[in-house]
Structure formats: structure tokens, C-alpha cells
Length: 380
Ligand code: KG4
Ligand code: ZN
Image 1 (cartoon, rainbow, N blue to C red):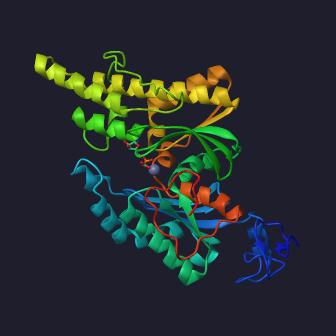
Image 2 (image 1 turned 120 degrees about the vertical axis):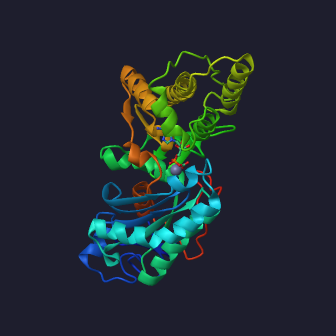
Image 3 (image 1 turned 60 degrees about the horizontal axis):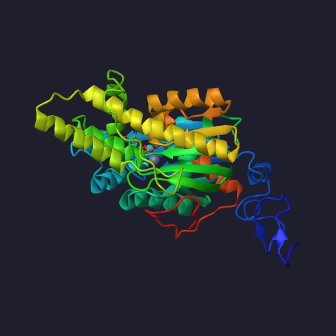
């Protein structure tokens, strides 16, 4: 007993004032072996839902690292028509698809709802209407089934994607998170504990890829298209700026680079010079990759860490992956990267993050809400 409260007999992270066992070991379930294992985090199966942007995704994940199913229903075709994600359309499509995607994830995993130990969902950051669909579905499942509800931070999900294919990876490590809405350099100090070293001051890396792709006529989604076209281009054809932020070696700024590409395109047009799409794409991509690699390696060296991981949609970029692989090899740093399908939005990563939240005792009530601007490390 501590300060008049009981610690769970199994030494799980909860402290309860009425029972010798915490709610997970006692309340609602029988004291059978499975519950005891579950409380220790030894046999935990989580149904995870992700709907923060334009993918309706549901996964079943065991013990944070074993993916039993990972279903992703992409809306890319619909949004391509408009040159980018239309929030209202994204929300409507999530509503239409979410039930089917949940059913398919359970079926593929060969599991029923009764086999789950918790239901997890992304509750921020993201598009509010899109997030609300996943959050409402997860709350309804939790209410109807009695499963504990765990809200997960989308970026923590991206980082946790690294645990799935790298069974030996454990914190601490440095992680570069580069997605459509975020560019962060973080120290993952422990499961669920992060220190932000640097972030973008303006556009996210993925946003810059998308905007430049539109400007050079590649369309949406920009990142994968620039990645592909760049293989045919000369990365040294045009020297675009590598922006530095005056008062921080780890912060990023990509809006100047985007403007430089637009200025280059305008000046070619005015002078009547031809534009080589592949050269511009490759030169822009090299400028982004150079900055990401330089800042990342500075952070790894400064922290004295020998483990470095990447996460987020832009982490699937082939030039970035090979540049980081080379740098890490030369410096004797272990380099971790999820497969491309686990870099872009998916629910397996949410199930991975949720497992460690579950073990840390995180449980949400039915008042869980979508938080579009949720900060990394923030808990609501
Ligand atoms: O992580 P993500 O799927 O969604 C967000 O959380 O934002 O990232 C999407 C972003 C988009 O901006 C997309 O253009 C970019 O990731 N992206 C890429 C590649 N694949 C996706 N950027 C560069 N190269 C790629 N291969
Ligand atoms: Zn994402």
C-alpha cells in the first residue's frame, strides 16, 4: 500500500484505491491466466483505427510488434481530381468505409472482437472531421464491448512503426519524422516519452514535395511522383538553396526552397528556356534530402546515440533512405526504417504505439475527442 492506495498485485502501472488488483486484472473480467498475462503486457491484442487524413485504416496488432492484419482503404483517387485532400470528402468517405474496414481487419486476423484486449484510435493531430469518424467508431466499440479505449497520437504512431519490423529496437534513439504535416527531429527517450530537438518553421517536408510536384505539373500525390521522376533526372542540374534557421541547428525551413523552385520555373518561362521536369524534381529532392540528412546526423552525434530511425510518409523516399543508410554506415550508427507501406498512414503503427500506452496505463474515457493540433508528447 502507498499513501493509502493499493498498488496492483501484478505491479502493473495502475494504482487503485479499492482493489488489491487493478481494474484490468479484476474489474469486468475473471481472474484467469489470460487477464493476468494481459495486465503484464504479455499477451495483448489491440484493434487499432486510423482516420486522420485520407486513409481509412484498421489493424489488429499483438504485443505491439506482431501485425495480424493491416487494412488500408486509400482515397487517393478521389482527391487526385482536386489536386489535394478535400477535408469534407475525406470525412464522408471515412464514414462510408469504416465499418467494412474494421470487419475486414478482424476477418483477416482471424479474430473476433471478443479476442481483443483494447481498442485504439488516432485522436490527433489531423483533419478534425476525419479524426472524428475514427474516434466515434472506437468509442462505440469500446462502449458496446467493454474494451478499454486508448487514444493515440498520430506522430507517435509513425515513430512506433519502427518497432514492427525491428524487433530488437528499443528506446532511446533519435528519430526523424517527416510527413505531409510534420517535420520533427526527436529523441525517443522511452516508450511514450519524447524530447523535440527540432521542427519545421514553415512547410513540412511532405508539403514541400506536394507543392513542388504541382508546380512542375506532376500533380497529387507529389512525394511518390517526385521520387519516381527524379530517377531520370540530374540532381545537380539546378542548385536550389539549403535553408538554415539562424537560431537552431535542428529546425527546418522548406518554404524558401519551394519559392526558389517557383522562381526558377518563372524565370525559365520568361526567358523562353525549356524546363526539364526530371532535372527540377531531382534537384529539389536533393536539396531536401541534404538538409534532412545533415540535421539528423548532427542530432545523432550531439546526443551521442548509436541508433537512428526515420518515420512518416517522406521516410519512404528512396533518395532519403539511401543517403541516410550511407551516412549511418560510415558513422557506425544503426539505421532503422519501416517498409514504405508502414511509413505512410496505416493503423498497424497505431496498434504498436497503443500497446506501449496500454502498458503505461493510458486509458481514455468516452469523453475522448478529436484534437486536430495535438502536440507531440501531449496527452489529453
Ligand atoms: O505520413 P503521411 O502518409 O501522412 C501524414 O501524416 O501527413 O505522409 C504523406 C506525405 C505526403 O506529403 C506525400 O507526398 C509524402 O508523404 N510522401 C513522399 C513519398 N511518399 C509519400 N514524399 C517523398 N517521397 C516519397 N516516396
Ligand atoms: Zn501520417
